[in-house]
Length: 178
Image (tube, rainbow, N blue to C red; front, side, top):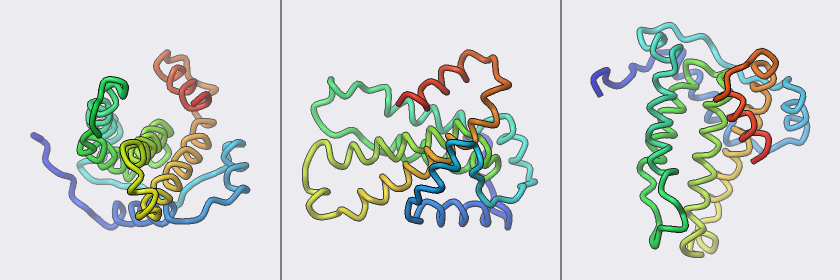
């Protein structure tokens, strides 16, 4: 990477800590209902660093989607062994970085939720060891995915009425019909 890694500051640490705490919380039905109405928000502060300009233009989202697409692009029917989840984890890391700067970006929450879903699928698809021995990890992936989908749904309500972009409309379709 020519740009290098982002530098942490108080704002990004605060946002990351809040996101991590949210993903660990239990799932409450009322929060799901609030997300359906677009009324769910997350406690985050504005981040003003040199990397903020990159995040505003979606640079970290793009890097995350490149890594995520590398993993997602390999068809499951063609694979004979478990996939390497390194690309998936790299994609999730970049998507989290994007969310540290722009926490209201619904498609970053949506793609991060998909990363957790794929991580869960990979853990249980090829052997039953994880289901038998490491259920805590599986619950963590599933809970994180649900929280991310909830935030994606809630934040999408703010964007949906004002978009005419075909890619955004297709992404909305994917979110609502997955």
